[in-house]
Amino acid sequence: MSTAAGGRTADLSVQVGPIALKNPVIAASGTFGYGIEFEDVLHLDKLGGLVVKGLSKEPMIGNPPPRLYETAAGMLNAIGLQNIGARAFLEEKLPGLRKLKDVVVFANVFGYTREDYERTIQILEEGEGIAAYELNVSCPNTTHGGIQFGSDPRSLDEVVVKARKATQRPLIVKLSPNVTSIAQMARVAQEAGADAISLVNTFLAMAIDPETRKPRIANVTAGLSGPAIKPIALRMVYDAAKAVKIPVIGMGGISTASDIVEFLLAGASAVEVGTASYWDPRATEKLVEELSRWCVEHRVERVTDLIGGLQME
Ligand SMILES: Cc1cc2nc3c(=O)[nH]c(=O)nc-3n(C[C@H](O)[C@H](O)[C@H](O)COP(=O)(O)O)c2cc1C
Image 1 (cartoon, rainbow, N blue to C red):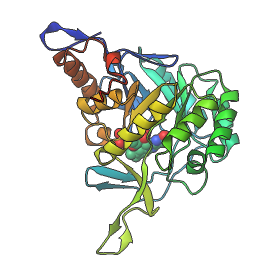
Image 2 (image 1 turned 60 degrees about the vertical axis):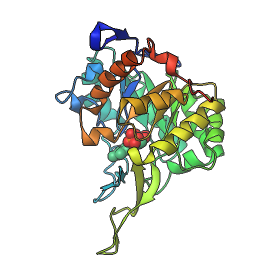
Image 3 (image 1 turned 45 degrees about the horizontal axis):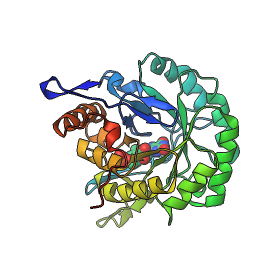
């Protein structure tokens, strides 16, 4: 329960398949470090959950700079999945995260091959306190792997089947928006054994400096995120939610409580918030408070009443 103005309360708790969250706001992967670094900036225990930076079996240094560029209502990034590696995560970050009360910790997993995903999960299986894996099959910023898994139905099936066999923990498949039919990819993930899907990752994009005639990002192409992508992300969440029975976690440009409500109405059971944390590191915590107020003001007693509640007439 969450208290808002006038002492009235709204029940913000949601269920994503087997995972219970005290509210639907989850910090998105790659925009919230390994979570624990935000300990001094906001009250981590206010969040429904957090997804850590994409982890691979070995540490990765990522792409050369410049790797970030602000665009109209959005941001381009080509970080290239820089991370400390799954084993260092278990040793250096997870113990701190385990101390958090009622905050669901998701490990985002990335690999260049199916075996990389399997190996990374095998390492993470040793870590207590990971509630679920989010499989990143959709990063546009690497030269090989990642995006191919997310944009080819057969490769997607194979990588999810492999990951499914590697763990009993819930598996969330994070879909790429860089596809023709998001409904088809959602169905493939479901049939391959996903417990839930999350979407969207960033849109393949680029920017050029007209003065130097050079790309703004060293990698040339990059992923677009932030409010600029919200209407497209919302449409994709709507299409995906209609196509599958498993729960959907929606994201893409969320920066206000009413954005969250839109995603819930489109069929998402929870949301992730990414780029908003770059503009305000406390954005996720503030969104929980704002959503609670929104529900009270709109006489919504349970946030779950909003899920899939789009009115067609
Ligand atoms: C700087 C940056 C790094 C990201 N790193 C990852 C990552 O490691 N794994 C992943 O699955 N998504 C990653 N993403 C994608 C976000 O989790 C999210 O899907 C996307 O940014 C859309 O949400 P937003 O508009 O709220 O940021 C990253 C996004 C940004 C901006």
